Image (cartoon, rainbow, N blue to C red; front, side, top):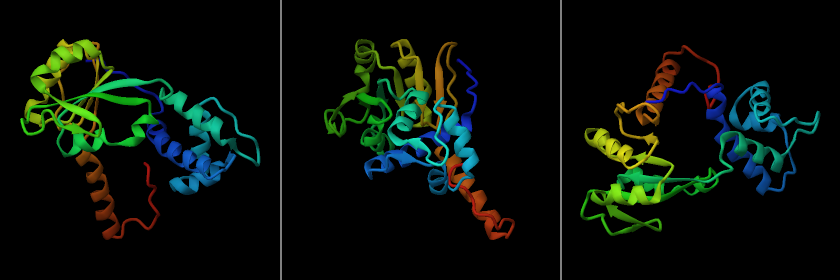
Length: 222
């Protein structure tokens, strides 16, 4: 499995929230975006926001800030969201259904084109405009469609088996929501999302706050 160290990872994790705020500012008719306004929204120090924005290669104007539309495009380009990527999703349960219906993916350049499940009650249904196909047809359909990414929302017990089938079908990048570390061959990219990890951080903050160990206002995006 490919292990790629991405520089500036904390900054990259903040970029989607920056983008959300910037698009809000654009829609409200704000021609310029100041780092101070974005920093206040993010509960961050303005210098952090300035450093993050500098990664895009765009330079702000002193006392004015950045042209909002230009900054939006610069952030999208930095993240590679100005190009479309297609995905297949396996597992149309609660989480999978929520991801399929997440409208902001269009802003990220991500389009889920195929959905699979093993539940006979779900197969054949249309969910957010996508038909749910039998997982037994997955290899044939994925080979034909050649999606860039596979999104795994399956139980941990079957995640490895599903991933192996998708690799055989030509998939080279995985967004894994199953709570298991996949064993993948070289050349395969995997981004694992552990939802409980976010709750663990929140729980730790609650614990320390309750114990009186911190009186500082905590940032929303660490």
